[in-house]
Length: 239
Image 1 (cartoon, one colour):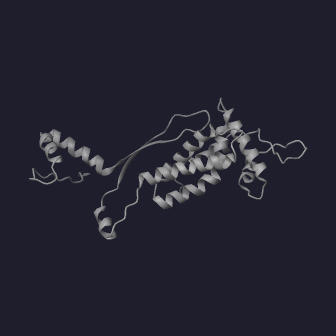
Image 2: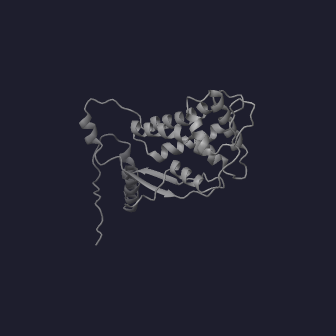
Image 3: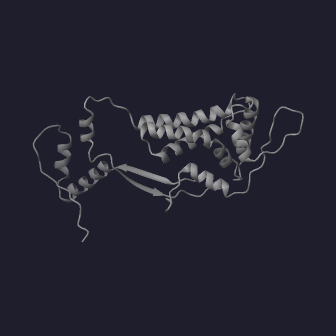
């Protein structure tokens, strides 16, 4: 079986972090007098989501994650590590948003990571429950973006609505590799244009080429009126 070369943002974070040297700096803090022991990221992530753990332990870990990510001024990997630690919470909500709105998974993940990193800069040592603040901000941002991009409409005749959209809704998409960043958080840039908009541009270009631009412009402002012409578009021959 051939695997798709495309990787989403979350998968890239998992891959890129695995290719780096293990991050250090996290310490366990269980409130005892014993010296705090070092924690790897793999050891810390289950603790952050384990509700059986004392809230003080999970909160102390999140504060450390925030502080270490802010110290990542030379691309030492801790901003990437902070994102990696949030993935279990983000993935669950991303799947819900995709199922609910049919939004592109890449768009949801990009919105989440952007909001998460922005909120990461605002968390203070006095912020209560920093983990919930970070995850809620990321998930709320993605949820709101998906809801605005795909508003719900109530219709009486579902079949009529489906038929009216037949052949519409297709997207033309172009992707470009973004610039590499020291912290490994570069992402693919994607430009998506509705196919009907692209067809509108094509028709406008043809009208200009054939000297019909003025007639088409006049017709665009008229809801009902005299037909000024017919333009049929057909796929070109490959022969």
